[in-house]
Length: 111
Image (cartoon, rainbow, N blue to C red; front, side, top):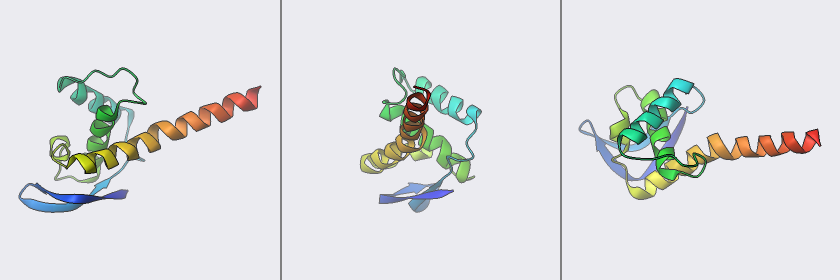
């Protein structure tokens, strides 16, 4: 479990939150599907998941909800735009950049 320090605190459930715990490592496939469903329900369309920063925010929201029993996905959408950009970058780095590097390494080793 890791922590995102917020540049701008946010009020969640009547409490000022200055940092958010999140847990990518223990997310399941179902958690990722839930994030996608919530994103689509909000009107989002995933075209290329590796590049869709709005979708990444929903994945972060799912990871934060998983790490904080008293916070749900909609609470995370209250964070500032700058904090959202940091959260999106964390998702992209964890889920997509490492997988691209691994895939490229695997392909080059096969050749």
